[in-house]
Length: 103
Image 1 (cartoon, rainbow, N blue to C red):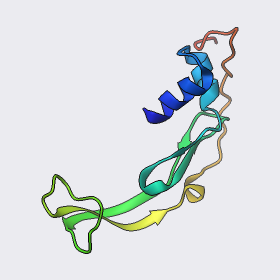
Image 2: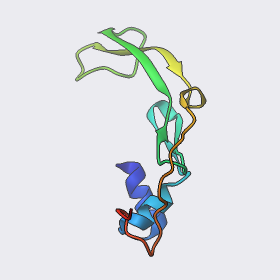
Image 3: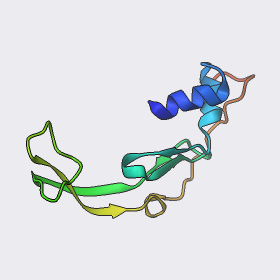
Image 4: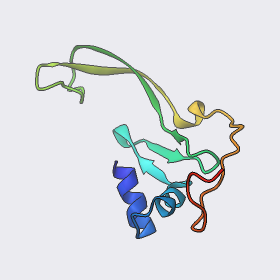
């Protein structure tokens, strides 16, 4: 939702086509200060992936669930670049003159 709001600000509009175009290639800060981005070719969003376990927290881990002392411990991080797969998408590009549902 924060990225959608940022795209609307960038587009200076709430029109869906203008927001969609503003999202293309947009980078955004995600969990733990990492970066994600919206691929222009198919509007897929890529970000790091985290493998985590739930249990008793130690050493001030940041994901304490509701101050219970239990939460999510990140065991491994898969960086954004490692999550990107090629696309064969032939998306019909939105433009200011063409409705989003054209064709």
